[in-house]
Amino acid sequence: MQSAPDVMQCYRVTGNADFTLILSARDVTDHEGCSRRHSFPEDTVLRFRTSVVMDRVKTGFAILVEQE
Figure 1 (cartoon, rainbow, N blue to C red):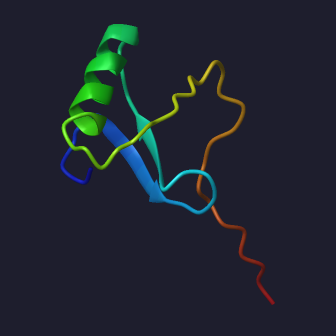
Figure 2: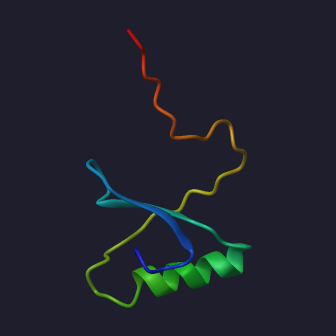
């Protein structure tokens, strides 16, 4: 995932999934190609779930640091 240009972010997570990927795709066809490249070549991926962002509500990674 580190060398894949279409993978914007990759997180190893707890819960129902092992990883969460944030991909950049032009359209549904491009997304299908990304899915095939990253999921299907190996037998270790049993299933994946896709969620499509419909609208950006808030983004950012800033951390509030209070000064004394």
